[in-house]
Image (tube, rainbow, N blue to C red; front, side):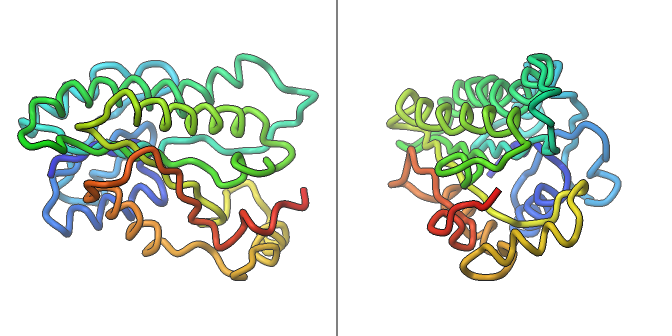
Length: 234
């Protein structure tokens, strides 16, 4: 299986390593930290997705001769005071979270249609549980863009059926954001019914399901430790 992954930090590193261990051909799109410096055997493409996401699927197709999956994880995430909100900042988030998903996804779909069999490919987005319920305060451009991603997942699932399946994981608290204090992070965990961070192993298990399923499309599955039944307090 030849897979494109966008987002080379944190969760992306973990997923790329696991896929590589299972014998998959993995291409990772990164902007700052080169994953090829730490993971042998992956194909790395440097690209600032806020400026340009075109042609990536074609580069991967030329490298591996096929594309069977596209996993979109790339996403900025930091606090923005609504009084300082600017449309330029939203466009930055939207370009990375939504436009790149659409652009690479549509390019990948066209190349996946060259594959044999009824199911020719899978596309997986990484959303956020909170946009399905109650967004956090102080993250307006992030959540507006994630809402767009969720909409894109449902739309492409219908457009690409019956041959390419499109789904998403709606993540909860996985790894503490760089700009979040330990005390604030602990509050998030305390407000999670399972009282724990989301397991990277669980994320990978659900991702693997979406990369192998022949019967699921248009699903946005919360992997959030039960946060969607708890709600948010901020």
